[in-house]
Image (cartoon, rainbow, N blue to C red; front, top):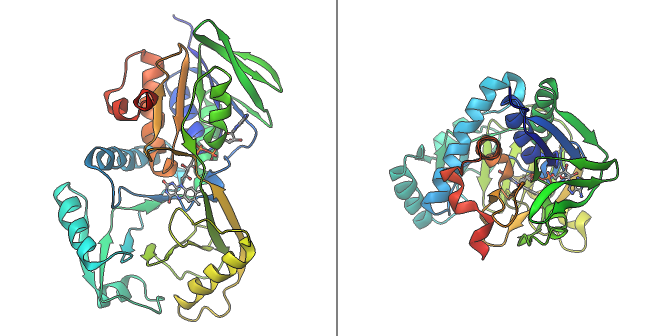
Length: 356
Ligand SMILES: Cc1cc2nc3c(=O)[nH]c(=O)nc-3n(C[C@H](O)[C@H](O)[C@H](O)COP(=O)(O)OP(=O)(O)OC[C@H]3O[C@@H](n4cnc5c(N)ncnc54)[C@H](O)[C@@H]3O)c2cc1C
């Protein structure tokens, strides 16, 4: 029997976890190296699973494929906690709602127009109800750190080594071949290295002369103390996107990706939380517990970077925004590509080489 491919995955956020799970499931010998188990951007995420408004068709289709991937993952790991709660959205003009419904409806997205009574029935705790909104029942959420931990535990149960608290300092290289990773736990040799290190990936790639054009805009999300059930699904109102977590916290951003809080982060969080309170009936007792400012690993053109690096043997990269939505697709496609050595067609638009 051939020796299993030895793959080192740098990063244990939602992306590294998914890649590790899919690799281990297919029999690879996996080592995960990460400073933080559960990730860095991942714990600060709003974690909405969607193929929503404003994307070109190829990317819509990829996101939709990833949404189906969450259904598959929920069968492979039944306690992964994905919740298809659906969304209500009215954070756009009536004209944009019309375009969104027509275009995405034609593409097969389950989107429909609803009225004030429908919104009130779906979310009875809302104090401000729009006359018209859009309902997308097929969107969902997941608690991203718990889901990442579940995939990592699944990988470990299939023999993966998890090295947490380890800092990856650089890629090891022989000619054009990546042969491993130098870490604070020593050098790790590998047949293949995957950089799933979020905002930390660019620095590591640079050690082998690979440039990753990635930006890291900040995003503020406020978290209430756990409270009784007040929201059934995702609520995407103008300047306030919110949902209730499995733990009972109401979390919100001015946008799902959060916004830059500026210099006075506490003041920005207090303002956002006041807005959240005014959107909910009987929320005077609702208290802000904490806020996060996450740095979103975002490739310069907004689309993910996924796939083998064409300039180097033995190296793949997976860096992106919308990583919570995309994780199951990234894990499946990239693991197949690494283990089979055949390019995955679905990854063609997302390769690093598009940046030239
Ligand atoms: C405010 C906010 C809202 C968001 N909302 C959504 C949303 O609604 N829907 C959605 O789909 N996406 C959303 N995202 C994006 C999504 O959360 C990210 O794309 C995703 O979490 C990225 O996961 P990751 O595993 O690539 O990175 P991270 O979670 O950042 O994990 C990186 C990992 O790499 C490790 N690492 C980095 N450098 C090194 C090193 N040198 N050595 C060792 N380990 C290293 C870290 O310790 C960590 O384990 C949001 C993000 C933010 C911040």
